[in-house]
Structures are given as C-alpha cells and as structure tokens.
Amino acid sequence: MISIEELSGIIDVLGAATIHEITCTAQEITYARDDEPPTEEDILKMCEKACSRHFLENVTCEEIIGMENTEGAEYFILGPDAFPEYPQELSDALDMLGLEKRELDMGKVAARFKRRLKMRTTHLENMINEVQTPAEPEYIEDLEHKYMDLVNIYYDFDTWVPDALTEIEENIFSLSARIEELKEA
Image 1: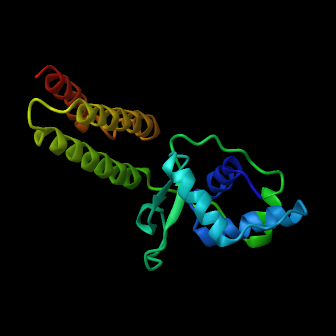
Image 2: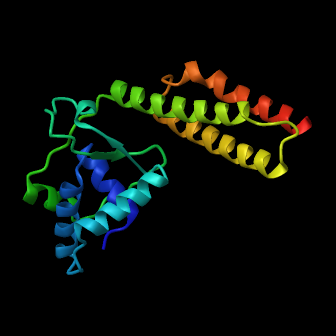
C-alpha cells in the first residue's frame, strides 16, 4: 500500500488526477514493490482522509487548463497542507500508463476556495447572529472552535493562493471580536 504522503506525491506530479488514474498509478507502484495493490475504494478513502486534512483538494475539469468537460469527473489536486513524498517507482508507473501532468488555472481554483471560505464565514456569522444572550458557555466554546478552524483554513488557503482572500480577511477576523462580546454579555 502507498502512504498518504506518497498519494500526495503522485498527485503533485500529475497536477490533477481522477480516482481511477490515482488507483492505476498506485497499483503499478505496488506491483513494482511486490506489494498488495490497493482497490479504487482504498484510494477513495485515502483521498477523502487527505482532503479532510487539506493534503488534497477537489476540483472540476473547469479548473484544469485545456480540459474538456468530462461529465462531472472529480479531480484531486495537491492541497495547502500537503507534504508529498515521491515513490521511486512513480516515473516508471506514469510512463507505463501514459499519464502526463495537467496544469491548473489557479485563478479559478482560488475563486472556488474563496467561495467555500465565504460560505463558512457566513455560516459562522449566522450562528453568532442567532445567539441569545446570555449565551451558554458550551455554545460559546463551539463558536470559538469553529472560528479557530476557519482562521486555520484561511491561513492555509492564503499561503496556497496568495492575495486571493484579502477581501474576506477583515470579515473573518471581525468575528473574533463578536464572539468576545458574547462571552462578556
């Protein structure tokens, strides 16, 4: 089996890849190692876990330069928190499969993640607006936890796609003051 770091390395080299492409590549690598090949389900679970930790992110064909519509196929790209490792067998596996690197339109990728971050910010803002004062301490803790998650994601994405998130930065950081006001009420 390959590791999540090796999974990240495969995707880094390919630029963007489908589950099927990742599975075929991982299988070729494990065959070369005389190891048990992963199933597509194994790879999907690894990709989902990697996405939850921002090692990988999802994109569509619209964010890949020169890619035609492939009926809603999901592609994985390297995420902001990835630390890829490159399997020794990767080059041979890619040659055998005839896979080449895809180029991303980072402007479109940035727009997608900006929308996602805006939605999370709006969701947290709505939660804050709905609080009845005095608020339960557990609810305030939940808001603080969600806020810290939001800030961490903001910083991850901001280093990944610099300057794409400046217009929502102030809104994100203003939520901290609002949570503090709720704590004091």
